[in-house]
Image 1 (tube, rainbow, N blue to C red):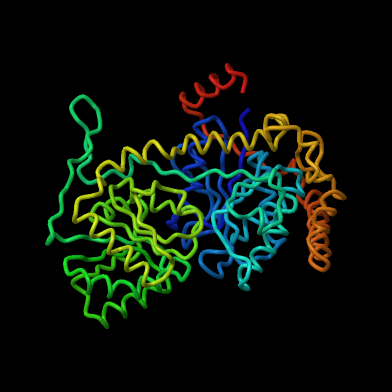
Image 2: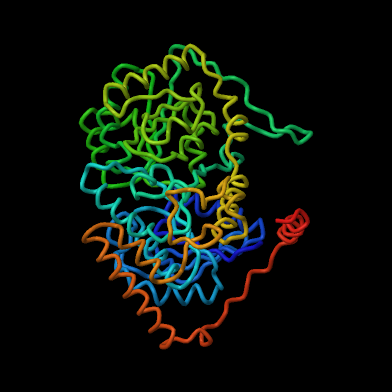
Length: 479
């Protein structure tokens, strides 16, 4: 059945990034499958109000104060009035939040459950358990996800103390056609023709590409330390670096100090549609991240025909086959050594990078991601039985929450919600319960102060013929 879905996150276009791209691509594919999707995010510079993107995707840019890395200042309750207005206007049934560090996401999940809406959360980051920032982030997740219906994530089961039955692992994907190698073209009969192998001689220049946000967690410090050593050991190598962030100044100082202006090109911020044009200028993609859940950019680079050098952290080792990548520990010496091995392999012509694109195209598909996400929506809405959704009768699972109703979906009853939050800790549990009660009282006040019948219902974007055909096909097969 079709759903009205609200994607909520602080991170969305025009800011470039993996989370932003994921939300956009997933939303457009869900629209293709007959669902209605709107996106709620904060305003970016002069981009405020309501905007329409491709395929009738509506975006609400809400004006909120930004504190750090495009994240809004957490207020818990001030977002509720405008969120409620949007939800009622668009007849939203499912709220899907994205990003463990997104304030709007966590607040939207809380408000959605108060309003009696189904809530799904997707985590796009990996955090540890020892440092202060991770402990704080994990406690925030524990609060937000105590009352969520389902979670799509990586290591969030441990971080938020979730029941594994509530969790699905769905990978990212790329539009491979947007990331083709330089000489990848169409033949006269319409078939795609892969580029011929490019053999590198011992003195040919090898270009290493880095496209990343220049922050500490993205391994910029490792990059600053490794680049001079790599260039010193390999005379016919140069770097192209794209991206922006507070660590850009460190890279610029490194270039000045080592007089590498003719061998390191700094491009600054680049738009997502320009990423492919930068990547095809290179032979190797270097990804020195210290923490990463998936790393969409390395899939894009492989699709462009680049050999990948990346740190062995998070979910990165599971993303691409071993013959496409050279792994390194997140350490300076190992990163330099791994890059040297990649350069040697290319010079010896041991790697057939021209075949990477066709292989990546068969590995990841946004249509598949949308279908699997749609199945999560069917599960939390009760369309699928617990046996179909979870694979067996969850009533036999001793760990299953007693506050869940029939069909395995979360109960909306206030007392059940308070029970879930109360178990979050001796002091935190009481604080979380207080927040839920205040949120519920605010909801009742809004229902009186701004009655639903006074809120205009938004008209739906006209569906394309293709969407109608997909919906008929789904009905034909009983979905």
